[in-house]
Image (cartoon, rainbow, N blue to C red; front, side):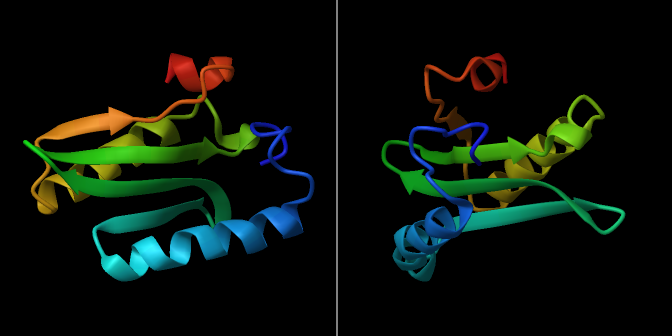
Length: 109
């Protein structure tokens, strides 16, 4: 987390406390998923996504993170495929990815 959001995360412990609080209410309302991915028992990545229903139903990927040791090994594609399938199950026909413009690697995604 410190790698991707150095200006927003002063410590991982503080981040997780604030993030849990921020996410708890939307999760209780439904149509939101926090996905943790593992490879051979090691945490490889996470994704935070939610469904919006305006003119069309859309899956929104708000956070998408792959641990450095797992990058470039195909897990990004597997995670993306899983999120798209989840969105389809929720009725989504569009996908939107939120990206911090200053994060070069996120913009490549």
